[in-house]
Each structure stands twice: as structure tokens, then as C-alpha cells.
Amino acid sequence: MIENRGTRFLILTGMKSHTQNRYTEKLISDLGRKYHAEFEAVDHEPSPSDIDKISDKYRNSDIHAVIAIGGGSVLDAGKAVSAMLPVKGRVRDYLEGVGTLTHSGQKKYFAALPTTAGTGSEATSNAVLSETGRNGFKRSLRHENFVPDVAVIDPLLTIECPSEITASSGMDAFTQLLESYLSVKANALTDALAIEGIKNIHRCLERAVKDGTDIEARSGMSYAAFLSGLTLANAGLGLIHGFASSVGGMVNIPHGLVCGTMMGVVNRYNVNSLLMQSEITMAHIKYTRVGKIFSEKPDQTDNWYMKFATDYIDRLTEKFLLKRLGSFGLKDQDLVKIANNTDHKANPVKFESQQLVEMLKSRL
Figure 1: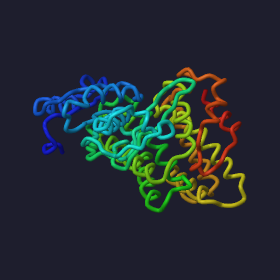
Figure 2: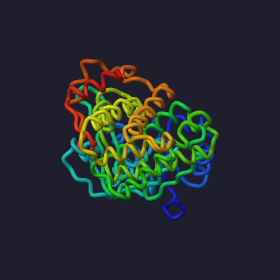
Figure 3: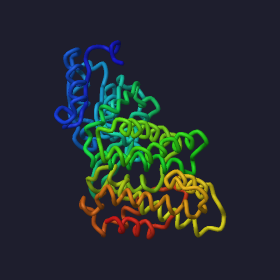
Figure 4: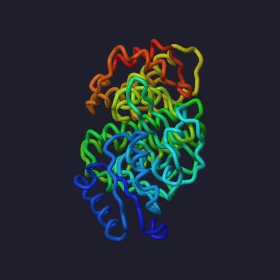
């Protein structure tokens, strides 16, 4: 993987990687013995200042490669640092919708090793950075060259992931697969990949949450998360991720939890709106197909399958005890601003601002 990339590596990990995952601990220990390795820990969703701090520290240290071993936040941080080490300036100057500069795409060799099954960052060309507050944002540093040079997807690295994180990250992958499948920008290839991932979610998510040592379930979820990265990168996402961006810019809340807690209500609004339409659209057909996968029942009506799909998601939301938005400090008076800042152009249904506020309020 990195034998021919030099001898000086910058390794980014999660704060608990050394103490709570024996497989990750051994991997990091082996790398540290064989190479000259510098270590940085990322224990939260990365901000522009986090990336600037790390990049400034190592920009003149002749780093040959960046290796990120952790969840989506660590992978995004590693991706951003690998992109900022060769260039000068602040990362926020290159962020979509925030900065005014265009990145050249030059970067350090970057290896991604996910220890959760969620964001699919190991397969995407963007790194998501957040700055929270009333004027906060959640934006991407993006270039086609930023796709990891190598992604090592080993389910053993996820096997000691706590059940709560397994649930929220798994719901993130589920959201990405379903939203990219339903996206107005979807195509035949992304549909095929998304359906394969959704089948793995149905087969493996609850098992992985219930028993973290179930390696078959962990493997299925790692594959589903990887597929979700491929599909979101090529088909886009919907309203749930629109909420994740606007909510994540206002309060400090894990990305996977926003997706998980909003997934049921958004899909129910989608389906209820579709069922009121007289014209059958591709979204009707796709929700029906998803309902057939989840129910495993033959000979039901299309409407029944569509409703079952939303019931299935609601059941997971309750079973996993996903926290509500208010648990992270979001207030009722914040909802209008969030709704006004929420993009959902690729969503199969378009909603008014008041409907967005209603959805948010139902999960406050």
C-alpha cells in the first residue's frame, strides 16, 4: 500500500483508536515501528481551523503520505490535510460556497482506512468541514483528485465500534443509499449499486448493532457504506442531507445522527406527497421496490410497499433510540433559519419552507 511512498507519514486517527480497537492499535503500532510516523488525533467533525492547524504544523516536514484511520470525520480530516499540505493559505478559502479560490488538485498521497461503516468518505472526492454557530456552515473541500489513492476496507477495523455509533453511522450509509437511489440525478449504474447497498443494509444493519462481533454483518455494512460513497458522488443526495448540512452548521451534532433522526420523517413526507399525486413517477416505482426488499412479502399493492418502506425506517429509528435534535441544543426559534438554508434540489419531492419546519419540529 505505502511501501514505495517514502518513509515519513502523517497518521490521523480517532481519539480512542489506540485504546478501544485492538486491530487498529496493532496496525498503528506496526506502522510506527516500520516508518517514521507523526500522529494527530481528531475527536470531532473537523473544522477549517483544525485542518489549518495540522497542515501548518507539518507543511515543511517533508511528509510523504497521509494515512487516515478512523470514522468519517477522521477520513475527511485526512483528505483535507493531504490536500492542504502542498499549498499555502487557509482551507476555508477553497471551500465550496465559502471561499473564492480554486484548488489545483495537488495533494499528498492519501490512504483511507475506515473504522466505521457510514459516510463512504473512502470513495468520495470531497472532505466535509464544519464551523458551528448562528453563522456556521458545513461545506466541502472538493476536487476529483482528492479521492483516496487507496482505500483499505477491512471489516475487522469496525468490529469494536460501539453499538450507538454503529447504528448512527449505519443509518447515514442507509440514508445515502436511499437518497441517491431516489435522486432526480440517479442513473442506471447508481441505481444498481444503491439497490445492492440497500439489500446489505436490510440484511446486516440490525445484526451489526446487536452483535458487533458478527463479522458477516460487519462485512455487509462496510460494503454498503463503500457503495453509498460511490452512489452519492455520482447521483447526489436529497433533503435529509440538506438538513444535515444546515443543522450541522448551527449546532455541534454528529452527522450520522442528523441523518438517522431525520430519515423517517423525511421519507414519510416524501411518500405521503407521492401518494397524493395522480401521475406515477420513478420515485413511486423506486419506493415500491425498496418496500418489497424490506417486507420480503409478495403480492402486495404498490401503495402498501411504499408505506411499508417508511414504517421500516421509523421502526429502526425507534429501535436504535436515535437522539432528537433538541438533545444537541437546537431550539424552536432556529428552525425557520435552518429551513431557509436547506437545499433539496435532488430530492424527488419539493417542499415549502413551512413543511421543512414541520419536519424539523417533529424531531426536536
